Image 1: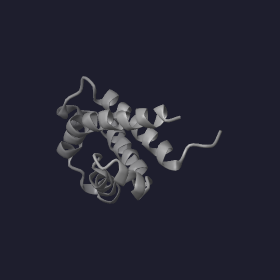
Image 2 (image 1 turned 60 degrees about the vertical axis):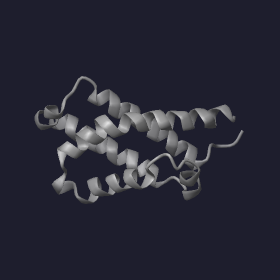
Image 3 (image 1 turned 90 degrees about the vertical axis):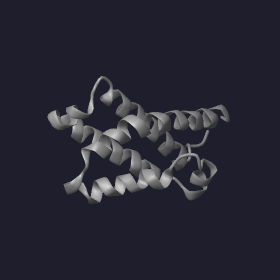
Length: 118
């Protein structure tokens, strides 16, 4: 048996991180980001990791699964890393609550397809 490709490892990391983001934000609201620094930093860091995993996925894999907004995800990661001093918590909250849940579903389908091919 051979090791899984780096793309498979990374897409599975993305799925795990998406689930964590959803879990961390469950029963929370936008105001919690202003009040709970640990929550805010955790969500930002998880979004950075999510984007870093996406950034490591090959262009071939990205093309095959073009229903994932790879450039947006990687762009968000770059913005968070390089613009750490000027992060808009409204954008973080909308990303966490509006963008990540449907992405998690799309990524889950990809992972299931990959796992079913084994």
